Structures are given as C-alpha cells and as structure tokens.
Image (cartoon, rainbow, N blue to C red; front, side, top):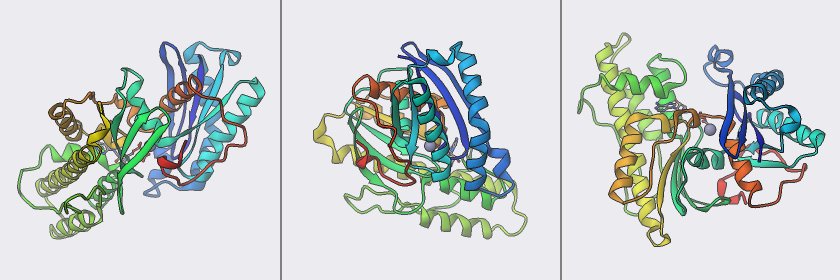
Length: 338
Ligand code: KG4
Ligand code: ZN
C-alpha cells in the first residue's frame, strides 16, 4: 500500500511516502531559522509557515518517490498532540487530499509515530516497553500491539529535552540544546559536581526534572558572568549524566512494574533518543534483561513524516480508516488514543 504521510505538529513541515518496500521519501522543511530569533517556537508563525510549505514539500516528496498524485492509495497525518494551529494545517491538508483523491484517510497520534518508527527498518517485538523522550514528552509506554498503548510513567513537570534546551539557553548555546550539550559534555570531567536525581522513592515510576533545572541554573550562575569553557563542559557532563541516570532508572522500574506481561522488546523514541550516552545505556539495560533493542535511526528520532505514514499504513492493514470528522487535538495522552 502506498501511503503519503504529513507531520506538522510543531516546527517541522514534513511529508513522506511509504510503500510495502519501506520509505521512498521523507522530506523535512525545518523552521528553526524562523523561530531562532525568538528563542523558541512562535505558534502563529509555525502555522503560517506550514501553510506556505506543505504544498511544495508534498510535491517534492512525490517527485523523490517517483509517484504521481494518483499513485497515492491512502493519506495519514498527525492529529495531535502539538500546537493546535500547526496540527490543523497538516491535518486539514491531508483530509482535503484524501477527499480529492477519494482514498482512505487515517489520523496518527504523534507519540505513536515516534514509538512505531522503531519498526520501519527492522521488525519490533511485541509486547514491548518504549521510553519516549522529546522536547515536549517524557514517558514510558507499555505497547501490547499496534494501536494498544498504556502509559506507565510520565514527567510531573519538564520533559527531558526541555531540560537540555533550557540548560543550553542558560549557557548561551542556542536551540535545540540536546546536541550541543552532548558535544560539550564529551569534554567535561567526571565527578566535578553532584546534580539531583528526583523521585527516587521505592515504586516511583514518574520522572521530574524541574529540580535538576534549578540546580543547573545555580551551578551556571556560580561560575560568574564569564565562565570558563571547561567549567561549562563539567556542568554539561553532570547534567547529561543526571538526565540519563533518571531515564534509565525509571525505565528499569517500568519493566519491573510490567514484569508479568511477557515484554519482549525495549525501544527508544523521540528527539532525545538521538543522545549517544542514552542510546548506550538503554542498550545495556535491554541486553541485561534479554530484550530486543536497536538504537533508532537518527532520521526517525526527531519529528518526521515517515513515522506518520508508516503508522498510517500499519493501521490501515489492520483496521478501518478514520472519518474526515476526526478532530485535531493539542493535548492528549496516548492511553486515550484507540
Ligand atoms: O521529537 P522532537 O524532534 O520534537 C518534539 O516532539 O519535542 O525532539 C526535540 C528535542 C529537543 O529538546 C532537542 O534538544 C532534543 O530533542 N535532542 C537531543 C539530542 N538531539 C535532539 N537531546 C539530547 N541529545 C541529543 N543528541
Ligand atoms: Zn516529536
């Protein structure tokens, strides 16, 4: 089945073409330059940019795939969660296309896309546990099968990616913060400062990063107005270690909490899944527990439409399409998404 997928939930306009052989095209028009000036994503600007970009990106994806418009057999789009105006742009575009071409339409939950992206290049083993870590989400999700999700633990405050981004901003390193902090941390010395790991009490499955964020702010302020690069690298290293430790510890606990479910795979998803030390640590946890794992391809970690087209195809092979009345949503956990 040839599925065209559209993802516009935040600041990337992405269109992908997927068929039975795999991903034919996965094009992303990033708005990073547009928002950088404001130090974060401006929702109204994001919506307008999606409106301008979606048609040319769609045409380019079709060209790259060597598909004509009438080769498209189904259309999938992110229905949420995300910036509502941004989601609406891609979703409305997808519905119009499905109506005009008279082909099925299917809506995809953004987090479902991130998780099932692990199945694009190799088969996933179900049931599985996924650690979803991005700029807006940090959660462990038990996945019984495609379409059946239960959230195990979630963040009580900030997301892991947000914590990387805020620390980078305090250090004057720009956006997005994760990649620059990871690079800087490589030059950091071990054990130069101790940063907190929150919610350590027995049985606690949730994450919390706000205390860590405050501790990092204090550590940076203590370095004075012109900090030395080596001191910043030490902070970056301690921060990355604290985030990775917390993520791995709560993932291990989520596996314990679902020990009776016959879990066969452990997967990483979302933008922070690009983090090298996190990929290594989750890989080690998976091998200790004898679970299937492979680090997700970088192209499918950050927001992309290949994951949306892929899930659309997976769902259409198993279930009926959605109606054109499917609503866009800004917030909504994966549990409530059937
Ligand atoms: O999934 P994503 O592209 O967008 C959201 O849905 O949020 O994730 C973006 C997040 C940003 O917070 C960015 O700093 C983080 O992923 N990120 C990383 C790395 N690459 C991207 N965090 C840590 N290490 C990285 N190498
Ligand atoms: Zn995302």
